[in-house]
Image 1 (tube, rainbow, N blue to C red):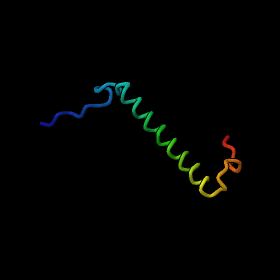
Image 2 (image 1 turned 180 degrees about the horizontal axis):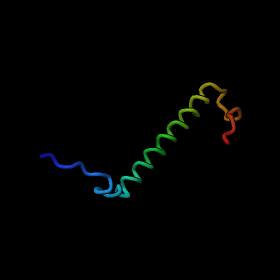
Image 3 (image 1 turned 120 degrees about the horizontal axis):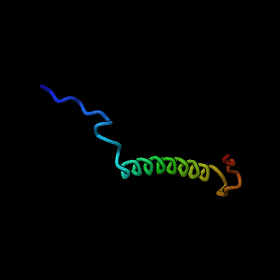
Image 4 (image 1 turned 45 degrees about the vertical axis):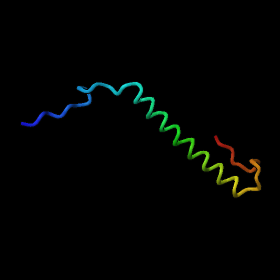
Length: 56
């Protein structure tokens, strides 16, 4: 006989460290995307930030 699968409620909530790690990973991905856009813009421009579109 197989064991019943444990549900999320039985396991309990994720430890705070796991939640923090996921949040940090998500933020790092956002920052990497932002910096990639900035680097690409700098390569295409004359080296100044004056022509950067204003972010809202």
